[in-house]
Length: 415
Image (spheres, rainbow, N blue to C red):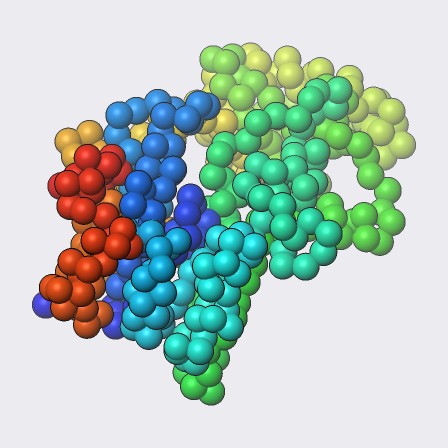
C-alpha cells in the first residue's frame, strides 16, 4: 500500500497535450493524485518532441517523460460516436478534468464545461488556452513561443539593443503556465472543501507571460520612462550587468547601491568610488560606458573561481551563466531534490526534474515512467465499469485502438 500523501485519493483526467496542462497534472501526481492520461490512438505529437529541431535530439522520449510521469495511459478516439460513453465515465470518476483542446473543437466533441459538468457538478474543470477565452484572438492556436513569449512582450524585452529577438527554450513558458494551472486547480479544490461546489478554472499562456513580464508591463500602464533595451557596453546601471571572467565564463552581477562599496573594496578598487567621472549621479550617467569598460578589464583579469569568492565574501548576488550540461552537474540540484531518480524509463533516462514545489514533512511520490500509448486501456475501462464485452465493442467501433496498433505506435513510454 502506497504512503498517504497530500492528494492521495484525488482523481485527475489529463486530456491536455504538450506541456502546460500535462505539467499541472504531473505536479498533482507528485503529491499522490491518481492521473489518467488520455490521448489519441496514435499518441500525442509531444511523444516525438525530441526529434523536432531545435529540441536536443535523442532516441529517448525525454520531453514526454518529463510531462507525463506517474500517469496511467488511455488511448481514445474522441471523434468516435461512442467516445462520449467513455468521457462521461471519466468525468463521473474524476475530481479534476484538464483540457486544452481549442474551443471550436471542444464544442464539436461536446467537451465544453457545460457538457462535462452535467455529469459531475463537483468537478474541477481546468481550461488552458493560448490567448484567453474572450477577445478577437481567442481562437488563435497558441504555443508558449507565440503567446507566452512574443505576445506578452517578454521576447521584446529580453534582447540586447540592436539585436533581433532570440529564440527561447521551448517549453519554458509552458512550464511556468503549468504552475499557474496547478495553482488554479488547488484554489478550486480548497473552494470545494468549503462549499462542496465544483469550479471552472482557467488561465492562458498570454496571462502567464504578461504576469512574468509584469514589472515592465505595469511600468507601461503608468507611463513610466523606459531606459530602452539592454546594452551591456552602455548599460542603464553598470552594477547590474553581464561580464566575462578571464576563463571565458559570463556572469550576471546584481550589485544594488548599498552593496557597491563593499564589492569595490573586495575587488581592491575603492578608487572607483572617488573617481571624478563617477563621483555623482549626473557624472556617472554620462560616463557609464567608461565605467563598464573598466569593469570589463578588471573582471577579465581573473577566473570565475576568483570572482565567486569575491562576490560570496560580500554576499552580493551573482550568477555564472551555465549551459545544460553544467546545470545537471550542479550539486545544488540533487541536494535540493530538483533532479530526482526516474524509475522504469530506460537505461539512459534514469533521472528527471521534479516539480518546483516542496512541502516540508511530505515526501513526493517517486517518479515513475510515463505510460505507453493506451497502456492501461483495459485496466482503466474495467475500473470505470465497462465489461469485457463493452471493451470489445469499443475496439470494434474504433473508439479505442486494438492492442497490436498500440504496440506499434508506442514511442513515448517504456514497456
